[in-house]
Amino acid sequence: MSALWVEIIATRGSVPRDAGTAMKVTAETIEGTIGGGALEHRAIALARQMIASDAPETVQTLPLGPGLGQCCGGSVTLRFTRESRPVDVPAPPLAASGPIAGTPLWLWGAGHVGRAVVRASAPLAFDVTWIDTQTDRFPDPVPPHVTAIPAADMPRLAKRAPPDAHHLIFTYSHEIDLALCAALLKRGFASCGLIGSDTKWARFRKRLEAAGLDPAPITCPIGDKALGKHPDAIACGTLAALLRERTAA
Image (cartoon, rainbow, N blue to C red; front, side):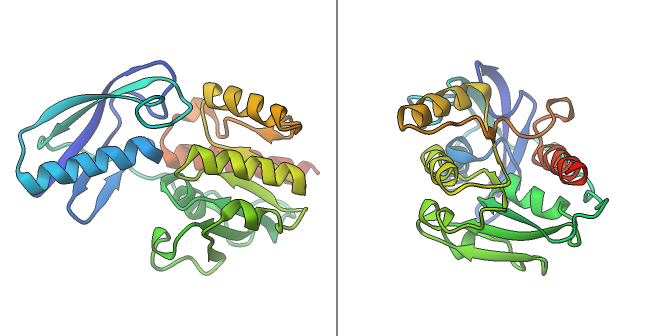
């Protein structure tokens, strides 16, 4: 067995992607995404264990809260199969418009959504700083209009971000996401968007308020729900909203 398809076949409650979403996993590569984060890390590990042992196809249900430490609160049923199927086609880059050249945009997380935002960001529209915990989490090469910064402690770096920067948060960890929200609220920003469900944001909001912070300036969820949950759809919806905001300012 050289490759497996991992497909979401059922969901319950708040989840990052809908039924029908799939990704292809081999021993070295990943094509597509089922939502990133802890769920996807677990699914990839399971798929690669199955590839290594030539295990039979299977179906597994994973609770996102107690099982994976995610705030979404729902559960996802995954089918691991050798059956062939297409991967979603990425959306084209979003064109720049208006007098917004050089807008500082800090991206926190180099997973599927982070990469989609980088693909969709117009070089003349955004001055992109891209942060993740390790160098090997970034693609090779990183686009020339992007400055990639590996930072083992991302919230600590956030405390030194320019106060006029725009921020988008989509790391692999809900705890890092929350710590970044807290650090940026203390630091100040032009705008800040967080990927997540309504359930995730409700829990984050309570924890930020308990820490004496006002979460109102943070936008969550990000993107345009009408476009769907594919990373490229989230990227296009998010950047379109940012472009409109900056043009109107």
